Image 1 (cartoon, rainbow, N blue to C red):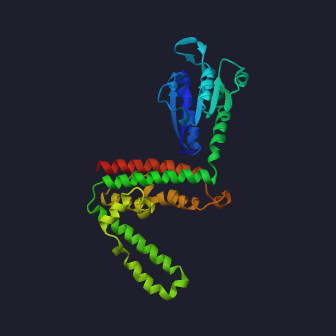
Image 2 (image 1 turned 90 degrees about the horizontal axis):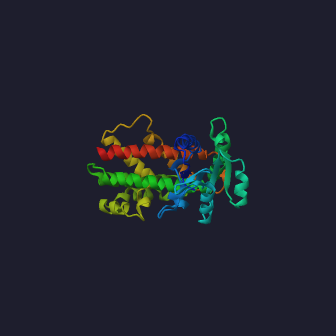
Image 3 (image 1 turned 120 degrees about the vertical axis):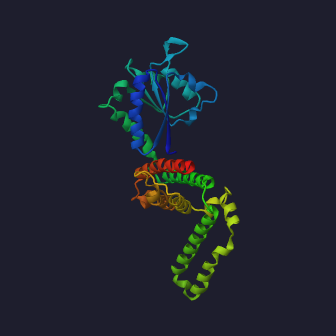
Length: 316
């Protein structure tokens, strides 16, 4: 499961559909996912070459959809049959306002993984019956393994975006400053590790002097090459270091963010620290104090924040 939640919606009543889409979009956002909803007035598009049906997590389908080549045929049920015949087993929310025997029609065709509603169920006073289904489907993400995958993937994306910013931004002595940041962080980690191990007491001074020489192990060009190497970049230039350097760039360029952009202040606690904890969780009990819904919402928030930062920096 991914944080982006892809929805296919087919209904030829455009005005009604747009109103219903807004309600469902809010539900998905409230569940901590980012809705990407593709809307179509008929189903002919889904069988065009290059259309990837398998990319959709959820499908909304009206029963009363007219085939553009034959307006006397109701094609909603036929479309679902074709979707299933193409071995696409995404959940489908199937609805109608013109027939009361939709469950029987679906059962006769042996169609599985389909939730059946009436158009009236999309009214504000009735929509809980539909949003509860969506919440049930999305609650599968509330497991350690799924959340670990989501957070790892999203943090990797953040890392790549920040590196792209760093590569393209103009900054005096940029790579010298990155070199200083990385080596100082390594020195600090080295010293903290030694001081925290009492069994190293007799060799403490000798080991601390080795820490001081860490900077001589690399030169600036070597650090730059390692950072730009896709296979070694994360090991040498950690997520925390990237975020720290992004803060440095913003400060040096004197760029002020909007009041609601808290990337600099909270990215580490909202995302990096959560990633580190999830990486070591074996079962749900170990992460019982973690709010998975809030973590997902924080990722979506910082996606927006980082996009804003990238636009500001690359335009400066």
